[in-house]
Image 1 (cartoon, rainbow, N blue to C red):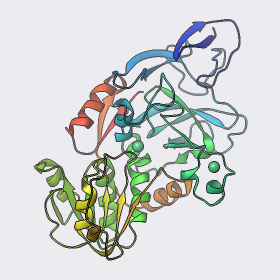
Image 2 (cartoon, protein in one colour):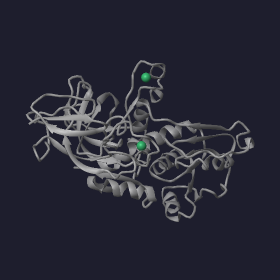
Image 3 (cartoon, rainbow, N blue to C red):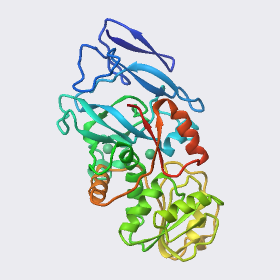
Image 4 (spheres, rainbow, N blue to C red):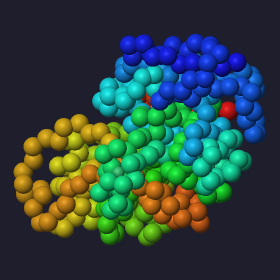
Length: 374
Ligand SMILES: [Zn+2]
Ligand SMILES: [Zn+2]
């Protein structure tokens, strides 16, 4: 049995066809191709996936062909996929989707079940992580300067290419990571974006003994632990009145936690803003000492209000962090392989992706929502 995906006016229709066919979104599946381990129990070459057809629409469950890995790609059986705030920005239309239907999800953990002809980095049976950065041009000025996170032709997992809200996913093996053994699949998933991009922001914050974290979600709860392990003091700022998250921050070693509109108890050496609120920028600047850095770590932020230049005075630096490089990933996983980072996954079934997104939007949990498709 073979399948063909045909595109009509922005929608896709899956038809069964005896013809081989490949398009940019899905490879044709010939079910005579046996997966090397743990094949789809249905044996019909399809998988369950949660599809986004358009912003503002709930995801819906579909049975679609299992994608097939091309030359540099691997196919993995997804065991865990984190739900990131970026996914919410896509669903909520703040980041227009680059393709529809789209399978979101860019904190993917799974087992390699098939490797492409040139994907020599991994073997069948390896446990790998697939991050947000899914590919780059590899030869532009940014790529040559080890700043591939800024490549104009970068493609992103769960945005430009299908991600992990599904039973299977393909990825370019050159952008995947082996994961430290000490983290099981559910605990490893949030490391792949919240951890990794959080870590890039943490490095960009520079040497800072007193570090402020604005928004204590998935990224901050990981980075707070990294900072504590390195002997730094963490000051956690949450939504005003969110005493549950403030308590959570203190349980992870924060020296202080409080409302984001409260004055900091000390002058901060640096601050990272994980919450997507531009209004936090002047607040964070006001909380820092001269020479401090304030990092905007999210992919999307509401407008930054006008603020007096005196807040920036004193050689304070305000900067953003975009995406990640593979070097960030290698450094981060090397750092945490010997220390114990609690990632606090909140598990959801694949079919509960909409519930997971709603819970994240409403701030109903501490930690990181993780879909468990298999
Ligand atoms: Zn490039
Ligand atoms: Zn993310």
